[in-house]
Length: 301
Ligand code: SF4
Image (cartoon, rainbow, N blue to C red; front, top):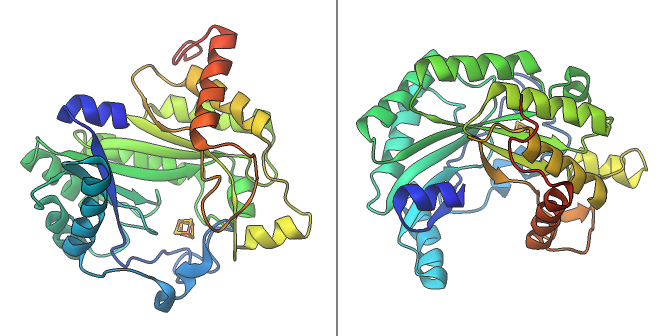
């Protein structure tokens, strides 16, 4: 994605993460309670949410960091925290418009659940894309797996049909919006062939970009308890490298790879501990593709 952004905006673009104070239907009881088993439980208590409620100031603070460290000049507003379309369309419009009008913002990316989108919200996204063709308007859906039994096991509280519906509706009503899908390798109960089936389904949906990452155990989560009790085994490095290489081979050549690895050394991450940096893991994936003599799209059909 950074390459895609650099090509489009002719210089590096840095993502500024925004916490707009959303919650999630999987936490507040409207779909379920408890959240996904890997979700950071800070989300259960708004009092524990940190940070600046003013969006413009959040952008300024984030941009200042990148300006000072990398001499950055252009930024993407990343609505990342929890479910960023989970509100009425009037409030969403105000929030997104507020971020997009910042002088150094070249677009926005909005992370959400596929069951938290509807026609009205997608028309809003398309309106932004049409009114601001110079900006990148992106929506990211957490598909995570195509297997409904896994979704149930991790308390995802939506099924794969929701993802397919969201993708189809987005293509129909918001054709100028960049569509990104997320997939996780190593979810509880999944083996390599199940993950490959999800990768093939992801490829069939032909997103504009993907984020493929391994399942990691974060402190204070249900998954952390399962891991401590020996009921969950995180993916090992070799398995993730193989699956990430499979994923690259099977994606359409036009799909941008935004991410091929999850968090590994961030504070709060308990497992897996691979003893590598993200860059080293990405290099291992690239070496694996070289070893196979394959490349992105070589096994796409
Ligand atoms: S959908 Fe996202 S925010 Fe909601 S519980 Fe799951 S991981 Fe957490």
